[in-house]
Image (cartoon, rainbow, N blue to C red; front, side, top):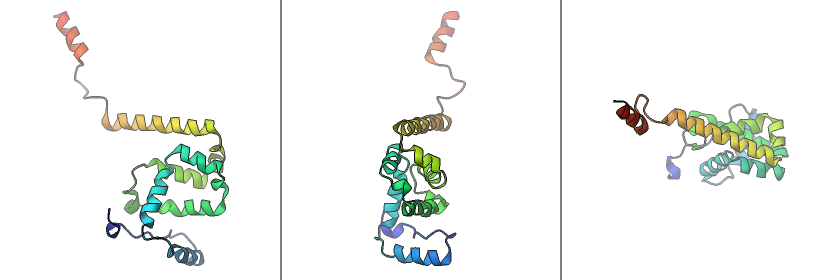
Length: 151
């Protein structure tokens, strides 16, 4: 993807004017590949192991880091969301921003593993719904053999 075809990243509209000006000033010092960097970071949030790493290194207790996560919510807008490969990253972004209990529990390995299992089961279910398990109404080879024996 060339950087010229990528959309410009704009700050969240809900920010207060003074805070938005400060944020714009800070963002003007960021590299030209900010779009790719933010997308890569956002998609890393789809990994429960990475969330556990953030929690165990106290990033999820850092107010400026939580503000950065809040800022990343603009990726939920359709013009940005279309670039996301792992939609769980947006779900986990919301949980990280809005659910302190979730952030605190991520320190526990058991909870990390539970989240990973639930994510895997969701992917299995979604895959089954989207792609199915075969064409309904067709008979398997075993069914065809059983009918041949009956005749």
